[in-house]
Image (cartoon, rainbow, N blue to C red):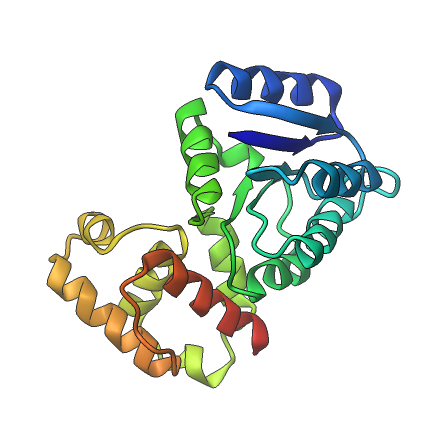
Length: 215
């Protein structure tokens, strides 16, 4: 699996390269700036990009902007954001088109290598890997919208776990619900958000997040 990595801190970048190679990833480029990231993504067209948000030259949002620019040229390019910050505007824009794998993890909440590697593989396969804190902030920013306000507290819990990329069975285990009960909550979520139900868990999560982005 071919990876482009963007991280401005040298030691962290080298550590990530070593970790990825140890798990049989091919790191085709490891860059430290937004412009270099965009060039690497367009040139190599990797299976997945692992991207920090704040990169040189301004250390604001170059990583996300480069990822967005690359996805406009390579629709569906899988992107896993690995950052210390939640940039809500660009995160919602990244999620909005509903195509390709997307992930957003917070560096200080990645607790082991297995969690990180699993997230990369899931995103590369077209799935989602969202940190619960990221999802909570995206949902909070839309909490005054009428459709989201219709959700019950339990439905919001189910929605947040859906957005992490969890299956109905996994959600049921987390919330101590039967799988059929989770299915009913999911159907209610789609109904209240005016979204057509889908058996594709990744696609439905992206659809929900895209909807939230538009409001």
